[in-house]
Amino acid sequence: MHVAALTVELHLPASHSLKDKRAVLTPILEGCRRRFGAAAAEVEWQDRWQRAGLGFSAVSSSAQHVTSMLDAIERFVWSFPEIEVVECRRDWMETEEP
Image 1 (cartoon, rainbow, N blue to C red):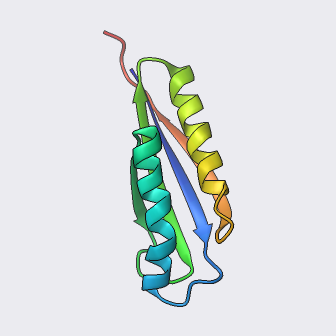
Image 2: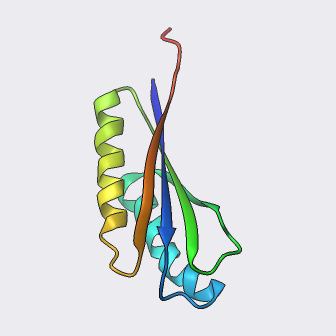
Image 3: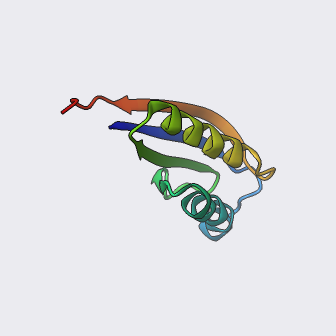
C-alpha cells in the first residue's frame, strides 16, 4: 500500500473576507474530491482572508498511481487564476508490506 499527502500553501490576493476566500477554495476542494477521488480539506489558516493551506491525500497499491494522482491534483490547483501557489510539499507514509 502506498500513501502520500500533498500540502499546498496559497495566497488569495483578491480575497477581502472569509466569504470571498471560501468562494475560491470550495471549487478547488470539491473538484479534487469529484475528479480524482482524493481526500481534500483546508488544513491551515482558516481564519485568514488571503492565505490558505490545503491538504490532499491519495492511497493506492501502486506508487506510480499515487504520484500521477498527486501530479494531476497539483496541476488542477495551479489552473485557478485567482490564486497564487506559494508552496507545494509531498509527504509519503511508510507502510509495512504484508
